[in-house]
Image (cartoon, rainbow, N blue to C red; front, side, top):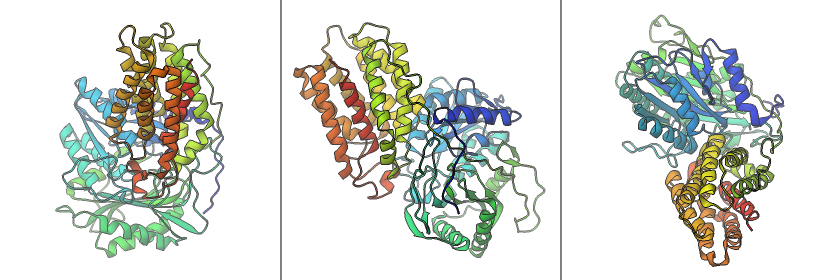
Length: 596
């Protein structure tokens, strides 16, 4: 396997827009762009009386998610930036484009950002009268302990969704296609998820568009077992494995994890050997040869096995193995026809006998990974007219952008490495939105509140991911508190009350507490110091509070993560500050320089 990859030159700022437009051009017979949104909807949708299956996730994983839209599979897909969830606004607009009046099933991987944004979109759809359900995919056995039967999924605790997404989407799409109602489609999707398990391995890291170096590296002669599809390092490192040894590791880690077989399953199992972006198909077939032998030796019968690229990670070298135990209903739905840009299944004659090797495979279509180089971080973000919120956000953008690489490095220690990119992108949109929404006189808290509300919504939409949602609610809740200000309210006291409200909102949305190594560990000392220093006036109080936040952010290096994938990586993040706490301290520090 080679470990270097020079992708196509590309500007990361427009990457999502450009590749979606190209996909819609290339597969216009199957999909079209959702108007004013980063998403695609099938040419067959909306269909009156049919449940709409809307899926989604970040860029960098094609064929997931946009490549799986078409008759018999998903009706639409909302697409986020690289390794970041689509925003709630993008999910909402995409779902609206696919809704045929019989309800909407939203489905995505169990990642904090996706859970937040898909959840917010579901609330909005339901409030408008559209019946909406959500199924989270939790197939990655390396990302957490086994699920607890009867307990709801907790995105900070339970397993994430990786290539098993494909199984869940496929059977749910087929159930909707045959006319099942919303509750029935939801039930079948949840059952498919409960019967699906995935384990993977990586031989080399991936490189994001515009980045000069891989997100993480794998030492020569070694293999990372249990890696994440966002470039998170594996849970265990071993020596370089032969194809047969790798197959043994994949199967060996999955067999003990399989649930009780469903009644009537007769040992059938859907099998997906998934390439992560750089592993060649011939190499995958070599691995599958041993996978097939091991499964059959364990008494399992592969049903319509698939070998190819289904959920990738840009140019990562590696593979994952997904298994879904089958009963008659799941087998029928998995076998049903579909037609999407990346996967087509034609109607098949039932296979004879018990051997499913000739039951007819689908037609996965490989896609090349694309990387590139950065453009100007300041495009479209010129300072605006001296207005306080606009100038403050512009200053924050400048300082955070100057530290973008370091924030990405901190995030990559136990996460996916996109924090710097996402927050810079979000702050760029926030500054522009504030400039357009701050018409009132300087010093008017209600005018500033309206600008912050607009900035928060724009940041969440542009940034995506968990950080985008949390930063968005931070700005929006602060703005909401300011818009409720009474005449003559003092600046420091007013902002202290607003920051208290913002902290409560961030804690509620993220489900985190102070001490769990998140942005709250910088926000909490900031708002406490701000209130303690109110008598000194806003500029001095703010700058002192920002210094407290900076110290607290540095001190998160001594904390053990308790939320997200970082919590599952054990002590890997110990000794490194939390990226979200550091970026928040930078933002607060920059704002302080604009106060006088």
